[in-house]
Each structure stands twice: as C-alpha cells, then as structure tokens.
Amino acid sequence: MTTLLNLTKKAQQNDNEAINTIIEKFEPKIGLSLKQTSPQEQEDLYQELKIKTIEIVCQYDIESTEGFWEFKKKVERQQEC
Image 1 (tube, helix red, strand yellow):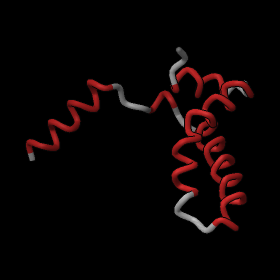
Image 2 (image 1 turned 120 degrees about the vertical axis):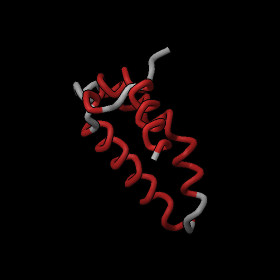
Image 3 (image 1 turned 90 degrees about the vertical axis):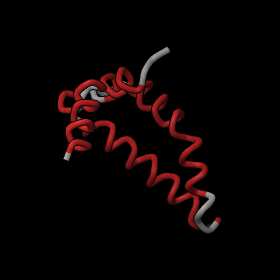
C-alpha cells in the first residue's frame, strides 16, 4: 500500500500515475463537496477542485512538515500556557 506521502513525492517528480491515484483517494471528499452546490455548477467545480488538488500536492513542502512526536511536543507546550 502506497502512502499519501510517497504518492506526493512521486507526484512532485511528475509521475502522472501518482497524481491520478491521489485524485482517486480524494474523490469521495470531492463528491461530497459537490453535493453542496447547484447541479449546473458541479462539473466546472469538479474540474477546479481537481486542478487545485494537483497544484497543492505539487507545491507541498514535505521537508518542512513536522513529524508526529514534534507535533505532540508542540501541542503539549501550548497546553501548558
């Protein structure tokens, strides 16, 4: 099973299969979001959401993302205040 992190790394190297897999993983969320709009706007919005998802994935800075333990320590420090 390929993780979203691995797919993101591949997508950033212009791997179209990885990009398609990411879109497929987000398909249920996109579908639910589209139900909140009028039917005549859904097709255009669907395309825009796919484009935006690809842009975000390709621009995502993997190296600056905190790991779980760093995030946990940060939350604990915030709770102390």
